[in-house]
Length: 458
Image 1 (spheres, one colour):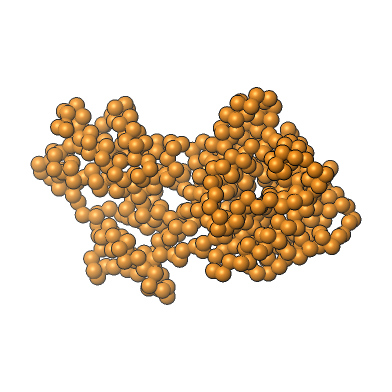
Image 2 (tube, rainbow, N blue to C red):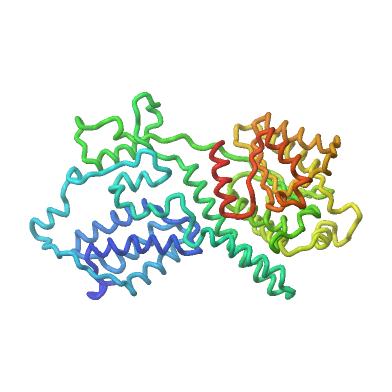
């Protein structure tokens, strides 16, 4: 397709187009793999050759740069966003126009040595790539680094909890179904942000080489790019011009245990413990879905939903979990008992689930990071009562931790209320002495922040 004279752009338009495109892609709910600063650099490199050949950028030049640098699953969205930007551009070129026949052209091709370039010394993930080519002082992505996604913040927690209350108050089945779908999308949005933070942490990061470090960790290709970008002569090359890869994080095996006993259905502020647990558990499972995981529910009986090696539809599992926020304990019993009720349902008996978790996770022969998350109100004992069964629960946890398994107690806020405190006090004291990490599930986003810190400790 020939270039339309009205669809030709000066190179300065790229300074508007690239950050605008990346920002809109980051905000778009259907784009799971958010663009990195590296994509912006690549787009600029793709746009320079056609500009130097023709003296302008065409509609197709900009469109192709946006699409080919985007992930395969996001390319249709990238094309749509790029077209919207160019068709509705609110861009005014107030920069001086250059004469491309003389000194002005040469000034555009000045040596890299005339520019000051910085490498972020301890950046995480691909920020280093961006910093290696641009002054860190003008990093327009600073606001996004390790921060919640667009639209995810403290207010998101209140919006989610309000949605739960509306769902529970609705008697219409279709309305509840629609609200459940909206709630799931909100939780997955939080989960995607958590996932990106974990990926940044797991990604091999580049840091300047220091004397005494292992030379085998030097990334030769990235180091050469960095030296060329810095414009070093051979005699000017320094140790810290070489970029060194940090070692990969360990793979993980994770067991999730969810308490669905009767006490989990008592309300606080219109929301019960099962809801608090689900609202934190769903984004956590989604964010860590690429890890090997198992899931078990317990009341008087244990219900294994998935083990490490079983193939299961994660969306179906998450939908079942989200639906629990509106269920009564009777409805829960019928769901897991084939429509029947019995006198044995609803007790708090985590022993078999803990033993299952122990056998699953200690059977792993590799050197992966092994983690157990227990979501409960931890109403495990009667005040002053010490039974062999309860002591066995703590013994299983202790054995797991001695074998290097990390345990996180995900605590419902109701567990700290006066009505439950006499029943949970001893449980908390024992777990603290054992070194179990305890995180409150009152706010999903804060919960995920603390889980991220817990995971990083490993």
